[in-house]
Image (cartoon, rainbow, N blue to C red; front, side, top):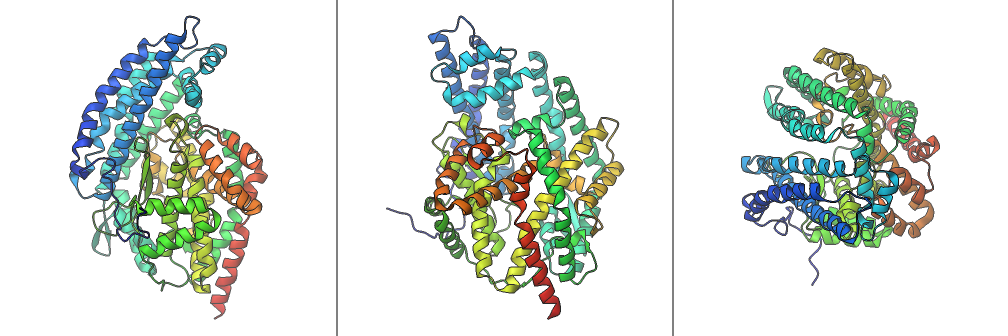
Length: 603
């Protein structure tokens, strides 16, 4: 019996993962059992025979197969616990018990890091010939990519006792700077015209149609972040310093780890960033047109997210949003649309607009349960519809890989935006087709605002993070220097046409403080442009390319970015023409935007 669609209930159900919500007893049991499981695996890995050694026979290979199978079962169990804890913490952000759920997994996460290091060291120094003999043994096919990455990391690691010490010290050292930042920034209060807000509550005020309100929100944020700038600078200085010391000892540079995590070559990233810089004059035209639309000589930083076009947008119900998304996607891929129906009808989506929820949105996979969940707040706007489509696209990516081994589904951020941006684009194009001119201007402003983020703001963050490492190698990062660097880089990123650039952006952007994901910036630009290239190829080849997209998604966890691009798009990521073509449609968007603004001015 099929489940009813569209659904009326705006909250998700996590009972199939762990029953009982925040007070789940089954979750408690997992939290208590997992450290023992991981300790057992740590003991086993040191007793395994040398991989690829001449004495390794059928019995020894079976020991390795058994260990790897048990290892990935543990990884999946930890993955379910982590996703469940984060989901509860986001859904009930004002509940201290929900907020503590993720911290209860701290020991488990540390043990996972120790286990990863212990596995790496078993392959350290292993010759290519012996490693290949090990990989070619029957039953190791599904772990091939993971083992190759493991061996690479092992060869770049320090001595065993030093790597073990790094993991232990990082918990109360390196990662402690991230914890300090999240704690002090989470407690920050912002004064806006005499009213007190949290940082999350203040962010929507920057989208107010009232310019004085936007400026008041910006000034309030500046004052608030300025009040903790010394602490933020100390955290960032020590975090970058730790990374530099570790990278130097391992013989790496500041980009090595980020490139490896994202499975991409530096040449590809630098070529892409070079092309992004080429689009600055076009984005400058957009910003100048937006200033005219707002009746300003020049945009200020607090005008970047100001609404344009009709502000009298009719609210869309959650039911209408679900049906609209499915209808638009079905024209492109009936299989994707059918899956969207299933996920929504299964209540895998949390959209309720209520107090006590965290800001933002995400799609989180549960590897053991082979399910996923979407978290967001649906405000009944067009942007809310496209956000829902985007997150459902992430879910589809997870779903087409659900029967694959966990070792084959570790998708790098660079490729993780493919299905999501594709689904978003399909819905966005449909909304533009049906819009009045006033609404078309607003929708184009949203689209070009995202282009500005991906081709202007994020490349600016990339340049700033590289500068942090360069300057930290010569001295100390203090708040004055950080503010000066930030203002200079982002003034250039926005083409010099935005005044009052936020020099404290380095403090407010939490991505700079992430300790597990260095350079959490270029993958977004990559995903944005790569998904546009996939969309263009689909439009060119028609319905026959849909199955190729599914195949691309299934290979995204076991191939490099360059291999995926070559196999599915016949593309060379080191060729600037690929990236230029991916961003090429923006010129038509800017021209249409300018024409609509000019028409509005003449009325």
